[in-house]
Length: 332
Image (cartoon, rainbow, N blue to C red; front, top):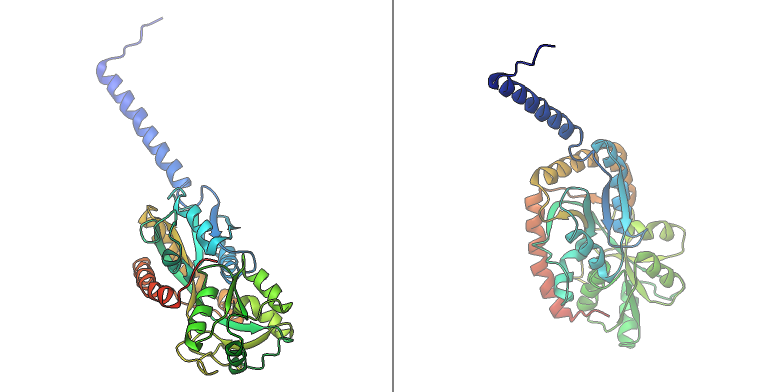
């Protein structure tokens, strides 16, 4: 048997060849497991199933999963005005597999809660705003309120007696109600619920006087006659409720509130992932099927760049801090 003739030169060539194959192999594996195909993406919604934010998240998730060629799981983590779910995402690994889909109440909470476990500006990176959703002021058909003017008059006649619901402290439904209460110069009690469905249940039962519900949640019940719509909370009428006036048209100027839904990632998520998610969402929102669904819900798409969305969040935080202070909003 002849001895192996391994020279140092041959050894170097062999090692170099082995390393080259290893690098090539790693590169192939990397491309196969590149984001977002390695695992399920999770959308944390900090409100209950059936809330306006939840409905939009599910409309988006199904089609977006197809575009990204992966699976997306919507997980509800309600409570404390959306701060419980937000805290989970703030502490999540910034690897592109956990996102927060929340409402404009996200920009109210820093002024309302003194002990948040996260920093709204530093711990999140905005991906994009998604839609604007009108809130609609609803009462029970048996409540005896014939209009916004009638409701205001009756509340003024019994200060501190009447009640209004919200989907939680600091939620967009709470903010809309506070702006209305301040503009109408009325005194009523805030009853926060864990989410929109619970608030609507008590409105229908007559246990609470009124609620600024996301229109996507209240619309079927309004059409069935189980809820009475007095006004929409935006500065223009909703195409899905064209006969329902705005609160300003109904006699309470300066009471409108813009309720939006947007998506955020943990702060240190790579920019490439955020940009890819932003671009993929833009593709989804242009799909005729998605546009038709949003139209039926009364939702208006409002897509923007991550940088512009971050800027909008900062501006709204400052503006909402003034409203929280002037309205004397408190956590009940």
